[in-house]
Image (cartoon, rainbow, N blue to C red; front, side, top):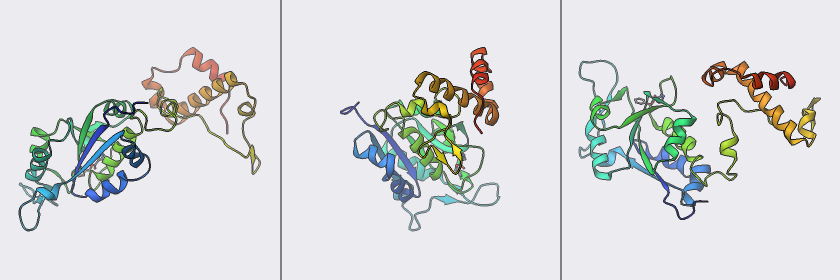
Length: 248
Ligand code: JF5
């Protein structure tokens, strides 16, 4: 356990600091902060504004609907705070967040998330201030804050020492590009649906083989793109799947 090691620092720049502070005080992230594993710092874009209305948005050049996040408050915040790099915007044009990207981020000393709002952020922020952009999926949010929370939770749980059980972050779904095997707890029989016998057999090798086969069956059925990304099924995979038919 890396107690005494420097925490991973994550800064978030937003016009809704309370949203991120509230989230970051809870559960996994809150405990990681208390334990000194994560150093989360939230910066209010409005705190650098000087006009009486504390404006952060303006109408788009060229016309069109909605408002655009102005460059000045974003540049001023970054220049006042000097937050950790890379400085990453959130938005659908970014690099898709996946488990491998999250693992990369969890291995850094720190990074900063910039939450956009309105119809978009002035392009000069992207062109001359950001180091990159992160997308959490192909859909449009009203602002980057919810996406920042997704990044915080996904990355936070991978920071060494954050998860209670050190192995559970590794053993989960996507750790080898497959979906999770089915999980069961008591009762052994629920409304006539029984827990598979193999899981109560105490035969740990057979349980491991069954779980791997179920993960393969589920991934083939639900996410064939993930099977393709691993280069297809091996002969060993096919043999295991034939030996252990899918549940349900
Ligand atoms: C955002 C301007 C950013 O909508 C998103 C998003 C979608 N996938 N990943 C992130 O970000 C919010 C809204 C408006 C910039």
